[in-house]
Length: 390
Image 1 (tube, helix red, strand yellow):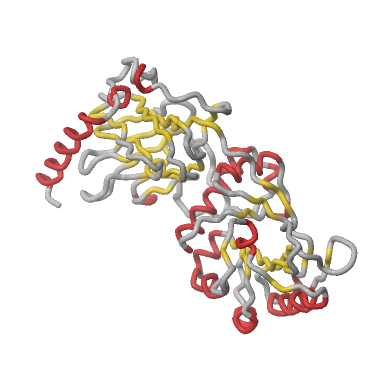
Image 2: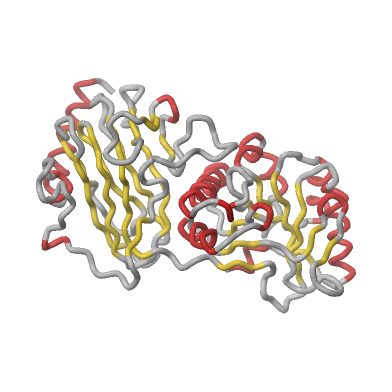
């Protein structure tokens, strides 16, 4: 698209947004709107629970987890990747750093976004401090049309953009985004907020309550991919729930698609770095879980709803961080058949609803065979985990 066409589109967009944007969104620096004061007609409804900031890495201060993609921004997905988006320490709005985006081509607006878990029929306020020309802040997936907040120019300083929305009856997550405009130069973002009631904490469990004669086979990590295990799964039509890390999943996504081809199978969340999350604060746990969720969603097309904490280590912050990432269940296990083991952590045989953990290793084909034999001995059959969580 030519420069003149881009500028014509920009002029049209500005005219449209001027007609629909709320006054606080386009206020000049140091005005009441720029400072975040809501206008009388846009005061959000009072939430039933205290409002908290639900954004992940809102101040761009958190370190990237080990094993994260090089140059990635924790908590955020930027369309131009590290070629455009970087955390910088030059004149942030607050703290030690901010996000600076320099669109690399004439066709890039430099968008960065994240998924935020929300509640249906609930009012939220999104805001961010920005610096640059024609910077936009908005949300999609709210269930209702929402014009973005924007500014023509911040005059070289920082300006606060604010937008408010009430989610629709079926909205459980929204996509929060910031971007500039074509050929309008770099922009910076800091102190992002999505204020509203937090989701209820996820539920921690080692088994799935059911009287059906079923067990659930789960396989973690993904560093070793076994053709023998793949064949065994296909031959026996085994529904498998797998919890790979983003790095091995991204290295060979086709393998995980094949081993979860049986109905009832799924790919779920296992964190980015396989760290002991109970030793991390809530905001870093949220990065670990949300970034892994985003990778699994991008690779396999379905957002995870189950989180397997590495080493089975979790605390109350883990449950809230998981919920903030749209996760409903934090799952451990009742039995371990990894690396030749056959440990059942309750008396007797396997029981209905038991969860069996294994790992993608050089023994996983034999581990699956022994797990299936143990289920047969107890009169149980493997079933799809996600089918029993609905």
